[in-house]
Length: 329
Ligand code: NAI
Image 1 (tube, rainbow, N blue to C red):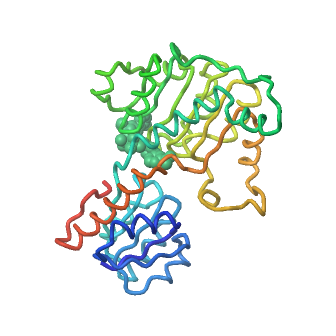
Image 2: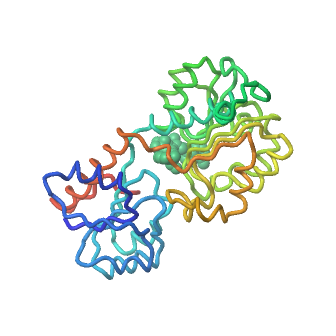
């Protein structure tokens, strides 16, 4: 099928071209983000391939429908950036990549945790300046600590297994209990119990109206002093203003973010010449006990290959018999 591919980075093109080496699909790559204006780039394509920071609101979806687009192929698991009700109303199927590598995201979350706890980011900079002191680098053993996981789907389960391997006591909160997690040794508790008992809290639930600002002032007040929070899920799960106050007061001891509330306009692009215009993000980057990465949890060779394979297979399936494989509910 003819595919209009938005928000292309060189690594996207490399993996999609590799999987599409037989030329099954004709893909036109655009570096622009998908929004109302960039829909003008579409000519006779029938499929739009979009990523997490593309705009798929009602206005854009109507425009795509008018342009003859028949399928929206997301190359992501998350779909909170798509107006699904509107897509349904327009009979515009939306497919996604439900699982490409839960390990990639879980391992990145663990990476943030280890780096923050032992001050590896600070030690790295220090040693390059010839400073070999251990000042303010003391961490804590993860072994024996209580790790609270919110959302025990594919990624939360992978994170739980790593933490169990570290000898942590793993507790979890989810609206659905994962039997495999229970067998592995995870204990399900209420959200309040988790917030008040965990030394480390890691977020792995999707962004929904229920989980928007799940970690806000009230939830933070219930947590242990000096708690560590890791968010590799979606930025809007965390109220950034509230967490900045909690960092200032010492309530939050360590914070690792792979996602940020207002990341759409920033992440994946290079603003090093202009500086950070977003004042909240700029403030976050001033804390020595905060690490922010630019939504790179998914970014491994295995995940990129799976993303390209599943996305192109979703498109092929639709082309063959009009069926919707990996459709968004
Ligand atoms: P999943 O669908 O397998 O698991 C999500 C879990 O969250 C489910 O068990 C579900 O029951 C639970 N959940 C739903 N509502 C909840 C609530 N109100 N409270 C507590 N738990 C709730 O999803 P998966 O693959 O594990 O991904 C998790 C999240 O990770 C995605 O929603 C996405 O936002 C994020 N993600 C981040 C990536 C990155 O690069 N940083 C890459 C891929 C996904």
